[in-house]
Length: 153
Image (cartoon, rainbow, N blue to C red; front, side, top):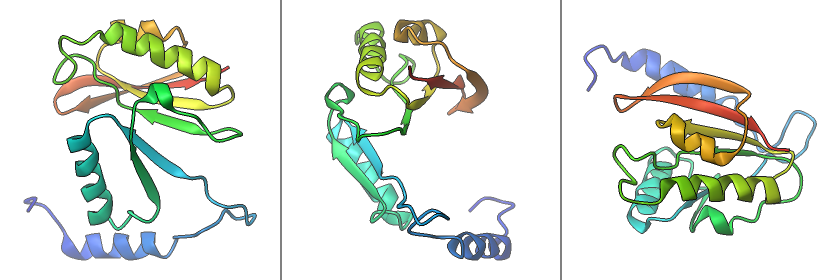
């Protein structure tokens, strides 16, 4: 229902993207698992509905849980995280403690991994005790945010 939506262009792009679907990498290695973890059951159900609507339910495993319980698979990987930053969600929670716990978990269990974190509160990201290697400014629902990239050592 966007005023400038071009249905023909959309269909061409869907067809082009569909033609590139693969179940393995160019060298034949399997694709990495895509796993999502969400603490809130209602948000988890919304994410499951979104993956079904996008036709990706078979490719993405969504689990209820807390990142503090995350056990990563062996090898390297990429974590993408959108923790609360106290604007719309998380007000009243110990968010500094949450970020400190995230930083500790990453250092203990995810060396060699990359973290992309969406942050709307620079003060909280300091609690990670990690140094971002890249920052990309974005707006998330009208909130000034940054995608921050961290190489976990």
